[in-house]
Image (cartoon, rainbow, N blue to C red; front, side, top):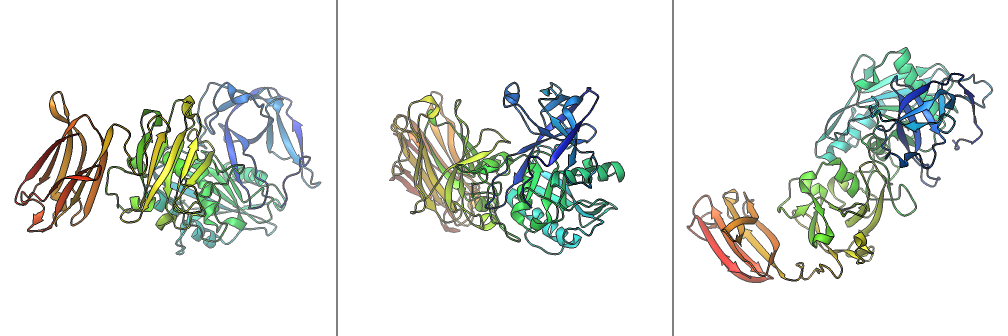
Length: 564
């Protein structure tokens, strides 16, 4: 159906002028490929659950207080609230209302009461999804309930659905279950409206559905963390779907109910995530589900970009923050699939890096490895992606994707970083295939703390490397490196223990060239790492020069001291 015409609505104002309070939400629309992108719209939800469309928000309205969808509470006079009618002759004055912020002298109030429609910001745990299959008495209806249930919950064996999508990407930390109760079967509730909804706008049908559920049927929508309305093909949609940002409700056209991308994307808005864009397109980032992916049945198997992944927090034990003006950094960026399959081998391997400074928007860095749970991601496959996002629920923008082939640059810079007058540089050095897969990246301020791929340590420092090939009892092997202080060797600066068996494990670190160090390796079995239970060994290197090779055969531990 075509977009809504500007003159298609008329309003009838209220006579009373008492103010109402409501919580302001952004509703984010998913545009169809090739169509003009739709700016987020605003809805306001009062404490009684009444939803109103909001118009004429002054450009400077949010300068007094930062806006947050679902949290920002406004007051508006009743004179700014109008009932809306359609140009269709058969329509009577509807109960749907529009708030004109200018006419109603709308303002932000200090009461930060959170609307019941807001989804918790906790992005781990159990979630219940109530799906409402909406039809009317004029034979306009979506796909069969069992088919919808299978697409969303996998109740008939569909392997790629909303439940498995979030379970896989979160590593089992998000578990969505179908709503239960006397009105639900397979998470689906049937709702038949008595009016003809063909040609009506999706927002109007949404309000009719909510009123029918709460006022007529007495359904307590707050019992469910998420509610998804599936509307028939005949309803007039702007795009494929839309959802309340950090709210409960999403609304999906039946035409796209089998599209994994659309379903995961809309629930992502409920979880508080805005779109992922690139250049002039708000959905132009091809590296995650909040940007653009394929519109196909049961596809794609993909997760989220660097910024969204950081804020979801699912991989936070491998997050790292970098402040480039405080020092350069070498980052070994993990494949998310390998991380979730417990293939991490070093404390210096990370899932997402956040680049922060006092006067810069945050940058987020990730290795967009196209394998396993992310094997069908649409773009920037097997590249290191750099994404800008200034806050949790903000729009993100892909700044660059780095690779080592002809399809992507290997180096990215941005000028006058943090007002320093110098360039921030990020450069990919290697894509390492193995267990795990990772990309090695260097970050530095040009002319301040330069490093290179060949020499990853800044001036005045040397690279220390400890490599251990374990025997059959790797979990009995551990080591630490201490830096000499005024009180002796009291400061542990690097360690590794409980190592995998019969495996080579390596760690490295930049050490000051003006200090002394002590390395100690220990075997709890007290017989070294060679040769009764395997041919283990270890070596220590400084800038690729070996300073120690050993097995400490028959010993409990071995110590090496050295100065640079």
